Image (cartoon, one colour):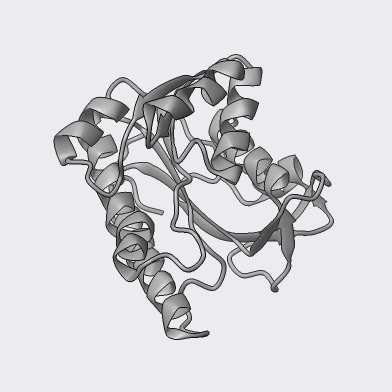
Length: 227
């Protein structure tokens, strides 16, 4: 597969890139600055310079053209200004999904956040939740073979290989390496198509959890089919 990973320099995105490249896939990761490309080259991936805050539809079209799948793993950091949150966690996701649709990309996976349909926390958190909620809804309304993953708090702990995955799961911690494994397994196994699922650490193996909650997807199926 040729996979474009948006946000390839982030802690989760970089793990997705490395895992895909290690298993022989053609990976293009987006970076904000050219000097960040070396890190991708070290794991066998290529880079595309994209400043999501300023990226035009034409630029996004060029980046995703020819891909089999797009993973959106970018996001604003803690304490980011409101306009950065609105863009990176909101409109940039919608714009990337639209670019994928225009380019004929079949598969689109976005890493969202746990409990995004609720309003809680301080105003900055609520703003992030609203941005992600709107973007998730936009992705679901497309004709792409989409997947929306909503992890809870992410850690840098070693992977366990086990998760809790369902429409709703209790709050919990999830190693980023396990989230990356969920992303790659879903893409390469054609699993979790048109599924929006929460995910945290748990007791079920990643492969089993994905298979149990999936309908395998084939490119011969109509992209306009609704579940």
